[in-house]
Image 1 (tube, rainbow, N blue to C red):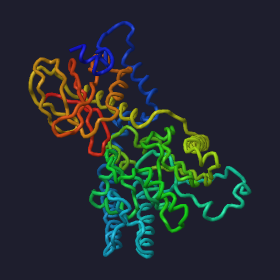
Image 2: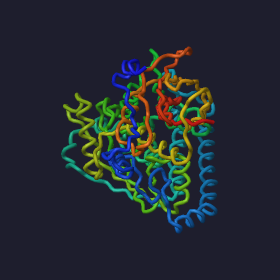
Image 3: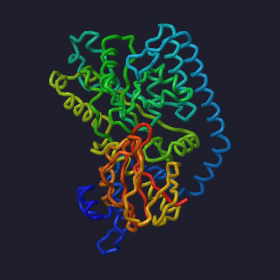
Image 4: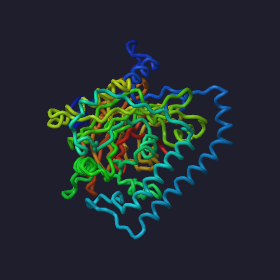
Length: 470
Protein backbone atom coordinates (compact mmCIF):
# COMPACT_ATOMS: atom_id res chain seq x y z
CA UNK A 1 0.00 0.00 0.00
CA UNK A 2 2.82 2.42 0.83
CA UNK A 3 4.41 1.76 -2.56
CA UNK A 4 1.08 2.30 -4.29
CA UNK A 5 0.52 5.57 -2.49
CA UNK A 6 4.02 6.71 -3.35
CA UNK A 7 3.40 6.06 -7.04
CA UNK A 8 0.09 7.92 -6.98
CA UNK A 9 1.11 10.92 -4.94
CA UNK A 10 4.59 11.23 -6.37
CA UNK A 11 6.26 11.23 -2.97
CA UNK A 12 6.67 9.11 0.12
CA UNK A 13 3.63 8.66 2.30
CA UNK A 14 4.09 11.13 5.12
CA UNK A 15 1.45 12.81 7.23
CA UNK A 16 0.80 16.43 6.40
CA UNK A 17 -0.09 17.28 9.97
CA UNK A 18 2.33 15.58 12.30
CA UNK A 19 1.40 14.44 15.79
CA UNK A 20 4.91 14.05 17.16
CA UNK A 21 5.47 16.19 20.23
CA UNK A 22 9.18 16.70 19.72
CA UNK A 23 11.18 19.43 21.35
CA UNK A 24 11.68 21.11 18.01
CA UNK A 25 7.98 21.49 17.33
CA UNK A 26 6.68 24.99 17.77
CA UNK A 27 3.96 25.81 20.21
CA UNK A 28 0.39 26.14 18.92
CA UNK A 29 0.49 29.87 19.55
CA UNK A 30 3.67 30.28 17.47
CA UNK A 31 2.23 28.16 14.67
CA UNK A 32 -0.97 30.18 14.53
CA UNK A 33 1.03 33.40 14.35
CA UNK A 34 3.11 31.99 11.52
CA UNK A 35 -0.01 30.95 9.62
CA UNK A 36 -1.50 34.42 10.06
CA UNK A 37 1.66 36.01 8.73
CA UNK A 38 1.62 33.69 5.74
CA UNK A 39 -2.03 34.38 4.93
CA UNK A 40 -2.03 38.01 6.09
CA UNK A 41 -4.32 39.36 3.30
CA UNK A 42 -7.20 37.25 4.62
CA UNK A 43 -6.74 37.64 8.39
CA UNK A 44 -9.39 39.61 10.28
CA UNK A 45 -8.01 42.12 12.75
CA UNK A 46 -11.14 43.83 14.07
CA UNK A 47 -12.64 43.47 17.55
CA UNK A 48 -14.28 40.14 16.62
CA UNK A 49 -11.02 38.57 15.37
CA UNK A 50 -10.76 35.38 13.31
CA UNK A 51 -14.00 34.29 11.63
CA UNK A 52 -15.81 36.85 13.78
CA UNK A 53 -15.74 34.32 16.62
CA UNK A 54 -13.17 35.87 18.93
CA UNK A 55 -13.88 36.63 22.59
CA UNK A 56 -15.69 39.94 23.04
CA UNK A 57 -16.00 42.06 26.19
CA UNK A 58 -19.22 42.45 28.14
CA UNK A 59 -19.80 45.98 26.86
CA UNK A 60 -19.69 44.72 23.27
CA UNK A 61 -22.18 41.97 24.10
CA UNK A 62 -24.57 44.55 25.54
CA UNK A 63 -24.27 46.69 22.40
CA UNK A 64 -24.95 43.67 20.20
CA UNK A 65 -27.99 42.78 22.29
CA UNK A 66 -29.43 46.28 22.01
CA UNK A 67 -28.81 46.37 18.27
CA UNK A 68 -30.41 42.96 17.84
CA UNK A 69 -33.76 44.10 19.27
CA UNK A 70 -33.79 47.62 17.82
CA UNK A 71 -31.55 48.25 14.81
CA UNK A 72 -31.43 44.85 13.10
CA UNK A 73 -35.21 44.35 12.60
CA UNK A 74 -35.60 47.82 11.10
CA UNK A 75 -32.67 47.39 8.73
CA UNK A 76 -33.84 43.95 7.67
CA UNK A 77 -37.33 45.17 6.79
CA UNK A 78 -36.06 48.27 4.98
CA UNK A 79 -33.45 46.23 3.10
CA UNK A 80 -36.04 43.72 1.90
CA UNK A 81 -38.36 46.54 0.80
CA UNK A 82 -35.55 48.18 -1.19
CA UNK A 83 -34.65 44.89 -2.88
CA UNK A 84 -38.26 44.03 -3.75
CA UNK A 85 -38.92 47.57 -5.00
CA UNK A 86 -36.02 47.46 -7.42
CA UNK A 87 -37.00 43.98 -8.57
CA UNK A 88 -40.47 45.31 -9.43
CA UNK A 89 -38.89 48.18 -11.37
CA UNK A 90 -36.77 45.72 -13.35
CA UNK A 91 -39.74 43.43 -13.93
CA UNK A 92 -41.83 46.31 -15.27
CA UNK A 93 -39.07 47.58 -17.57
CA UNK A 94 -38.42 44.13 -19.02
CA UNK A 95 -42.06 43.40 -19.86
CA UNK A 96 -42.49 42.59 -23.56
CA UNK A 97 -38.71 42.89 -23.98
CA UNK A 98 -36.53 40.06 -25.25
CA UNK A 99 -33.13 39.63 -23.58
CA UNK A 100 -29.88 39.81 -25.50
CA UNK A 101 -28.19 36.47 -26.10
CA UNK A 102 -24.61 37.05 -27.19
CA UNK A 103 -23.82 33.45 -26.32
CA UNK A 104 -25.87 30.40 -25.50
CA UNK A 105 -24.94 30.86 -21.85
CA UNK A 106 -25.21 34.69 -21.73
CA UNK A 107 -28.49 36.55 -21.32
CA UNK A 108 -29.05 40.15 -20.26
CA UNK A 109 -31.20 43.27 -20.67
CA UNK A 110 -28.34 45.80 -20.72
CA UNK A 111 -29.24 47.10 -24.19
CA UNK A 112 -32.99 47.57 -23.72
CA UNK A 113 -34.84 50.63 -25.08
CA UNK A 114 -33.60 54.08 -24.13
CA UNK A 115 -36.33 55.05 -21.62
CA UNK A 116 -36.39 51.57 -20.09
CA UNK A 117 -32.64 51.58 -19.64
CA UNK A 118 -32.75 55.06 -18.12
CA UNK A 119 -35.37 54.02 -15.56
CA UNK A 120 -33.41 50.89 -14.62
CA UNK A 121 -30.15 52.83 -14.26
CA UNK A 122 -31.47 55.80 -12.30
CA UNK A 123 -33.60 53.69 -9.95
CA UNK A 124 -30.71 51.29 -9.49
CA UNK A 125 -28.31 54.06 -8.53
CA UNK A 126 -30.79 55.64 -6.14
CA UNK A 127 -31.85 52.42 -4.43
CA UNK A 128 -28.25 51.14 -4.18
CA UNK A 129 -27.30 54.28 -2.30
CA UNK A 130 -30.41 53.87 -0.16
CA UNK A 131 -29.32 50.32 0.67
CA UNK A 132 -25.87 51.54 1.71
CA UNK A 133 -27.50 54.21 3.88
CA UNK A 134 -29.67 51.54 5.46
CA UNK A 135 -26.52 49.53 6.26
CA UNK A 136 -24.96 52.45 8.11
CA UNK A 137 -22.96 54.13 5.34
CA UNK A 138 -24.56 57.52 5.95
CA UNK A 139 -21.78 59.39 4.18
CA UNK A 140 -19.02 58.23 1.85
CA UNK A 141 -15.71 60.06 1.68
CA UNK A 142 -14.57 60.45 -1.93
CA UNK A 143 -11.35 62.00 -3.19
CA UNK A 144 -9.90 62.48 -6.67
CA UNK A 145 -6.21 62.46 -7.46
CA UNK A 146 -4.41 63.85 -10.47
CA UNK A 147 -1.23 61.97 -11.29
CA UNK A 148 -0.17 63.65 -14.52
CA UNK A 149 -0.60 66.89 -16.40
CA UNK A 150 -3.58 67.45 -18.63
CA UNK A 151 -1.11 68.10 -21.46
CA UNK A 152 -0.25 64.39 -21.40
CA UNK A 153 -3.75 63.59 -22.68
CA UNK A 154 -3.90 66.44 -25.21
CA UNK A 155 -4.72 65.30 -28.72
CA UNK A 156 -6.77 62.30 -27.63
CA UNK A 157 -10.16 61.96 -29.31
CA UNK A 158 -13.31 61.43 -27.28
CA UNK A 159 -13.35 57.77 -28.26
CA UNK A 160 -9.71 57.12 -27.43
CA UNK A 161 -10.02 58.90 -24.08
CA UNK A 162 -13.18 57.07 -22.97
CA UNK A 163 -12.38 54.14 -20.62
CA UNK A 164 -13.85 50.75 -21.38
CA UNK A 165 -13.81 49.36 -17.87
CA UNK A 166 -13.55 50.27 -14.21
CA UNK A 167 -10.85 48.48 -12.22
CA UNK A 168 -11.08 48.38 -8.43
CA UNK A 169 -9.67 46.47 -5.50
CA UNK A 170 -12.09 44.00 -3.93
CA UNK A 171 -12.80 44.11 -0.20
CA UNK A 172 -16.45 43.16 0.27
CA UNK A 173 -19.73 42.49 -1.50
CA UNK A 174 -20.53 46.06 -0.44
CA UNK A 175 -18.18 47.17 -3.23
CA UNK A 176 -20.89 46.18 -5.72
CA UNK A 177 -23.51 48.39 -4.05
CA UNK A 178 -21.19 51.39 -4.17
CA UNK A 179 -20.29 50.91 -7.83
CA UNK A 180 -23.97 50.47 -8.68
CA UNK A 181 -24.77 53.77 -6.97
CA UNK A 182 -21.80 55.49 -8.61
CA UNK A 183 -21.76 54.39 -12.26
CA UNK A 184 -24.08 51.36 -12.55
CA UNK A 185 -21.64 49.17 -14.55
CA UNK A 186 -21.88 45.54 -15.59
CA UNK A 187 -20.17 42.89 -13.46
CA UNK A 188 -18.82 39.38 -13.82
CA UNK A 189 -20.98 37.03 -11.75
CA UNK A 190 -21.37 33.31 -11.15
CA UNK A 191 -23.82 31.51 -13.40
CA UNK A 192 -25.91 30.54 -10.37
CA UNK A 193 -26.62 34.22 -9.62
CA UNK A 194 -28.82 34.44 -12.73
CA UNK A 195 -31.17 31.84 -11.23
CA UNK A 196 -31.55 33.46 -7.81
CA UNK A 197 -34.96 34.93 -6.89
CA UNK A 198 -35.11 38.73 -7.27
CA UNK A 199 -31.33 39.09 -7.66
CA UNK A 200 -31.28 37.05 -10.89
CA UNK A 201 -33.36 39.54 -12.89
CA UNK A 202 -31.50 42.49 -11.38
CA UNK A 203 -28.17 40.99 -12.46
CA UNK A 204 -29.48 40.58 -16.01
CA UNK A 205 -30.57 44.22 -16.08
CA UNK A 206 -27.06 45.13 -14.97
CA UNK A 207 -25.74 43.27 -18.00
CA UNK A 208 -23.64 40.85 -15.95
CA UNK A 209 -21.34 38.37 -17.67
CA UNK A 210 -22.17 35.02 -16.11
CA UNK A 211 -19.34 32.61 -15.40
CA UNK A 212 -19.39 28.85 -15.16
CA UNK A 213 -15.79 27.86 -14.70
CA UNK A 214 -16.24 24.20 -15.48
CA UNK A 215 -17.97 24.95 -18.79
CA UNK A 216 -15.58 24.09 -21.62
CA UNK A 217 -18.02 23.43 -24.45
CA UNK A 218 -16.93 24.14 -28.00
CA UNK A 219 -19.42 26.97 -28.44
CA UNK A 220 -18.36 28.79 -25.30
CA UNK A 221 -15.82 31.53 -26.00
CA UNK A 222 -14.80 31.87 -22.41
CA UNK A 223 -15.09 34.69 -19.95
CA UNK A 224 -12.10 36.60 -21.32
CA UNK A 225 -13.61 36.74 -24.80
CA UNK A 226 -17.01 38.01 -23.66
CA UNK A 227 -15.47 40.53 -21.25
CA UNK A 228 -13.09 41.84 -23.93
CA UNK A 229 -16.00 42.39 -26.33
CA UNK A 230 -17.97 44.23 -23.65
CA UNK A 231 -15.00 46.46 -22.83
CA UNK A 232 -14.47 47.32 -26.49
CA UNK A 233 -18.16 48.16 -26.88
CA UNK A 234 -18.06 50.48 -23.86
CA UNK A 235 -14.87 52.08 -25.16
CA UNK A 236 -16.37 52.78 -28.59
CA UNK A 237 -19.99 53.52 -27.64
CA UNK A 238 -20.76 55.99 -24.86
CA UNK A 239 -24.26 54.54 -24.46
CA UNK A 240 -22.99 51.01 -23.78
CA UNK A 241 -22.65 50.04 -20.10
CA UNK A 242 -19.10 49.94 -18.75
CA UNK A 243 -17.60 46.77 -17.32
CA UNK A 244 -16.67 46.69 -13.64
CA UNK A 245 -13.88 44.21 -12.90
CA UNK A 246 -12.16 43.13 -9.71
CA UNK A 247 -8.93 41.70 -11.19
CA UNK A 248 -7.84 40.19 -7.86
CA UNK A 249 -10.55 37.55 -8.25
CA UNK A 250 -11.42 37.47 -4.54
CA UNK A 251 -11.72 39.70 -1.49
CA UNK A 252 -9.08 40.69 1.06
CA UNK A 253 -9.09 42.45 4.42
CA UNK A 254 -8.50 45.76 2.63
CA UNK A 255 -4.81 46.19 3.47
CA UNK A 256 -3.38 44.15 0.58
CA UNK A 257 -3.53 43.96 -3.19
CA UNK A 258 -3.44 40.48 -4.70
CA UNK A 259 -2.09 39.58 -8.17
CA UNK A 260 -4.29 40.84 -11.02
CA UNK A 261 -5.85 38.72 -13.74
CA UNK A 262 -5.21 40.10 -17.22
CA UNK A 263 -8.83 39.93 -18.43
CA UNK A 264 -9.51 43.62 -17.82
CA UNK A 265 -6.51 44.63 -19.93
CA UNK A 266 -6.79 42.40 -23.00
CA UNK A 267 -8.97 44.93 -24.85
CA UNK A 268 -6.07 47.46 -24.89
CA UNK A 269 -8.53 50.18 -23.84
CA UNK A 270 -8.02 52.82 -21.12
CA UNK A 271 -9.22 51.87 -17.65
CA UNK A 272 -10.70 53.93 -14.84
CA UNK A 273 -9.04 53.14 -11.50
CA UNK A 274 -10.75 53.23 -8.12
CA UNK A 275 -9.65 52.19 -4.63
CA UNK A 276 -12.11 51.36 -1.83
CA UNK A 277 -11.28 51.37 1.87
CA UNK A 278 -13.41 50.61 4.94
CA UNK A 279 -12.08 52.33 8.09
CA UNK A 280 -13.40 50.74 11.28
CA UNK A 281 -13.03 50.72 15.04
CA UNK A 282 -15.08 47.66 16.05
CA UNK A 283 -16.31 45.60 13.10
CA UNK A 284 -14.57 45.53 9.73
CA UNK A 285 -16.94 45.45 6.72
CA UNK A 286 -14.26 43.53 4.80
CA UNK A 287 -15.48 40.08 3.76
CA UNK A 288 -12.28 38.11 4.16
CA UNK A 289 -12.52 35.12 6.50
CA UNK A 290 -15.99 35.23 7.97
CA UNK A 291 -19.24 33.52 7.01
CA UNK A 292 -21.82 35.50 5.08
CA UNK A 293 -24.53 35.21 7.72
CA UNK A 294 -22.23 36.29 10.56
CA UNK A 295 -20.89 39.16 8.46
CA UNK A 296 -24.36 40.47 7.63
CA UNK A 297 -25.48 40.15 11.25
CA UNK A 298 -22.51 42.09 12.64
CA UNK A 299 -22.81 44.66 9.85
CA UNK A 300 -26.46 45.27 10.72
CA UNK A 301 -25.59 45.57 14.41
CA UNK A 302 -23.05 48.36 13.80
CA UNK A 303 -24.77 51.75 13.84
CA UNK A 304 -22.23 53.57 11.65
CA UNK A 305 -20.01 52.13 8.92
CA UNK A 306 -17.40 54.05 6.96
CA UNK A 307 -16.25 53.94 3.36
CA UNK A 308 -13.50 55.87 1.60
CA UNK A 309 -13.20 55.97 -2.18
CA UNK A 310 -10.13 57.16 -4.08
CA UNK A 311 -10.72 58.07 -7.74
CA UNK A 312 -7.59 57.86 -9.86
CA UNK A 313 -7.35 59.34 -13.37
CA UNK A 314 -8.12 57.24 -16.41
CA UNK A 315 -5.04 55.14 -17.19
CA UNK A 316 -4.06 55.25 -20.88
CA UNK A 317 -1.83 52.33 -21.86
CA UNK A 318 1.33 52.92 -23.82
CA UNK A 319 2.05 51.06 -27.04
CA UNK A 320 4.27 48.63 -25.12
CA UNK A 321 1.47 47.97 -22.62
CA UNK A 322 -1.05 47.40 -25.40
CA UNK A 323 1.19 44.73 -26.88
CA UNK A 324 1.95 43.15 -23.49
CA UNK A 325 -1.16 42.70 -21.28
CA UNK A 326 0.97 41.45 -18.38
CA UNK A 327 3.03 44.64 -18.42
CA UNK A 328 -0.19 46.68 -18.56
CA UNK A 329 -1.61 44.68 -15.65
CA UNK A 330 1.49 44.95 -13.46
CA UNK A 331 1.87 48.70 -14.01
CA UNK A 332 -1.75 49.36 -13.06
CA UNK A 333 -1.41 47.17 -9.98
CA UNK A 334 1.74 48.97 -8.82
CA UNK A 335 0.06 52.35 -9.32
CA UNK A 336 -2.99 51.33 -7.28
CA UNK A 337 -0.76 49.91 -4.56
CA UNK A 338 1.20 53.16 -4.30
CA UNK A 339 -1.78 55.52 -4.36
CA UNK A 340 -3.91 53.39 -2.06
CA UNK A 341 -1.10 52.52 0.36
CA UNK A 342 -1.83 48.83 -0.22
CA UNK A 343 0.68 46.02 0.36
CA UNK A 344 1.41 43.84 -2.66
CA UNK A 345 0.90 40.13 -2.05
CA UNK A 346 1.55 37.03 -4.15
CA UNK A 347 -1.33 35.05 -2.64
CA UNK A 348 -4.54 34.29 -4.49
CA UNK A 349 -7.84 32.45 -4.36
CA UNK A 350 -6.28 29.00 -3.91
CA UNK A 351 -4.34 30.14 -0.83
CA UNK A 352 -7.47 31.76 0.54
CA UNK A 353 -9.28 28.42 0.29
CA UNK A 354 -6.44 26.74 2.16
CA UNK A 355 -6.55 29.35 4.93
CA UNK A 356 -10.33 29.01 5.24
CA UNK A 357 -9.94 25.24 5.45
CA UNK A 358 -7.48 25.65 8.30
CA UNK A 359 -9.90 27.91 10.15
CA UNK A 360 -12.77 25.47 9.64
CA UNK A 361 -10.60 22.61 10.88
CA UNK A 362 -9.61 24.53 14.01
CA UNK A 363 -13.23 25.43 14.70
CA UNK A 364 -14.42 21.87 14.16
CA UNK A 365 -11.73 20.34 16.37
CA UNK A 366 -12.71 22.64 19.23
CA UNK A 367 -16.43 21.88 18.89
CA UNK A 368 -16.68 18.15 18.07
CA UNK A 369 -15.07 14.85 18.95
CA UNK A 370 -13.40 12.86 16.15
CA UNK A 371 -13.01 9.10 15.78
CA UNK A 372 -10.83 6.88 13.66
CA UNK A 373 -12.68 5.23 10.73
CA UNK A 374 -12.64 1.45 11.23
CA UNK A 375 -15.80 0.11 9.60
CA UNK A 376 -18.71 1.00 7.35
CA UNK A 377 -20.72 3.92 8.66
CA UNK A 378 -22.17 7.22 7.44
CA UNK A 379 -20.13 10.40 7.73
CA UNK A 380 -21.83 13.72 8.26
CA UNK A 381 -19.83 16.41 6.50
CA UNK A 382 -19.59 20.10 7.15
CA UNK A 383 -21.21 20.81 3.78
CA UNK A 384 -24.47 19.36 5.15
CA UNK A 385 -24.31 16.06 3.23
CA UNK A 386 -24.01 12.53 4.57
CA UNK A 387 -21.74 10.02 2.82
CA UNK A 388 -21.56 6.28 3.40
CA UNK A 389 -18.02 5.04 3.92
CA UNK A 390 -16.64 1.51 3.73
CA UNK A 391 -13.14 1.35 5.18
CA UNK A 392 -13.12 -1.86 7.17
CA UNK A 393 -9.36 -2.32 7.33
CA UNK A 394 -8.59 1.38 7.78
CA UNK A 395 -6.02 1.31 4.98
CA UNK A 396 -7.87 1.42 1.68
CA UNK A 397 -8.29 4.81 0.03
CA UNK A 398 -11.87 6.08 0.00
CA UNK A 399 -13.22 7.69 -3.15
CA UNK A 400 -15.55 10.68 -2.96
CA UNK A 401 -17.19 11.94 -6.14
CA UNK A 402 -16.64 15.56 -7.13
CA UNK A 403 -17.88 17.71 -9.97
CA UNK A 404 -14.43 18.92 -10.83
CA UNK A 405 -10.87 17.99 -9.92
CA UNK A 406 -8.58 21.02 -9.97
CA UNK A 407 -5.87 22.14 -7.60
CA UNK A 408 -6.79 19.26 -5.27
CA UNK A 409 -3.28 17.93 -4.93
CA UNK A 410 -1.86 21.43 -4.60
CA UNK A 411 -4.34 22.28 -1.85
CA UNK A 412 -3.44 19.17 0.11
CA UNK A 413 0.26 19.76 -0.32
CA UNK A 414 -0.20 23.34 0.89
CA UNK A 415 -1.48 21.92 4.15
CA UNK A 416 1.93 20.35 4.61
CA UNK A 417 3.08 23.65 6.10
CA UNK A 418 2.74 24.37 9.80
CA UNK A 419 -0.91 24.22 10.72
CA UNK A 420 -1.06 25.08 14.39
CA UNK A 421 -2.62 21.67 15.12
CA UNK A 422 0.22 19.41 16.23
CA UNK A 423 -1.95 16.49 17.35
CA UNK A 424 -3.53 15.70 13.96
CA UNK A 425 -2.35 13.93 10.83
CA UNK A 426 -3.67 14.01 7.30
CA UNK A 427 -2.88 11.54 4.56
CA UNK A 428 -1.78 12.66 1.10
CA UNK A 429 -4.22 13.31 -1.70
CA UNK A 430 -4.00 10.65 -4.39
CA UNK A 431 -4.45 11.07 -8.12
CA UNK A 432 -8.00 11.52 -9.35
CA UNK A 433 -10.07 8.81 -10.99
CA UNK A 434 -13.45 8.67 -12.67
CA UNK A 435 -16.52 7.11 -11.14
CA UNK A 436 -19.34 5.37 -12.99
CA UNK A 437 -21.13 8.67 -13.63
CA UNK A 438 -18.11 10.10 -15.42
CA UNK A 439 -17.51 12.71 -12.75
CA UNK A 440 -14.04 13.35 -11.44
CA UNK A 441 -13.23 11.97 -8.02
CA UNK A 442 -10.59 12.75 -5.44
CA UNK A 443 -9.00 9.94 -3.44
CA UNK A 444 -8.23 10.62 0.17
CA UNK A 445 -6.21 8.26 2.34
CA UNK A 446 -7.45 8.33 5.93
CA UNK A 447 -5.11 8.37 8.89
CA UNK A 448 -5.72 8.76 12.59
CA UNK A 449 -8.77 10.73 13.67
CA UNK A 450 -9.25 13.36 11.00
CA UNK A 451 -11.01 13.11 7.64
CA UNK A 452 -10.36 15.83 5.06
CA UNK A 453 -12.24 15.77 1.75
CA UNK A 454 -12.00 18.05 -1.25
CA UNK A 455 -15.57 19.13 -2.00
CA UNK A 456 -16.30 20.66 -5.39
CA UNK A 457 -19.25 23.06 -5.38
CA UNK A 458 -21.70 23.43 -8.26
CA UNK A 459 -19.82 26.53 -9.41
CA UNK A 460 -16.56 24.64 -9.66
CA UNK A 461 -14.89 26.14 -6.61
CA UNK A 462 -13.11 23.76 -4.32
CA UNK A 463 -13.12 23.73 -0.54
CA UNK A 464 -11.79 21.30 2.05
CA UNK A 465 -14.45 19.96 4.40
CA UNK A 466 -14.39 17.77 7.48
CA UNK A 467 -16.44 14.70 8.32
CA UNK A 468 -17.32 13.05 11.59
CA UNK A 469 -19.29 9.96 12.51
CA UNK A 470 -23.07 10.41 12.65
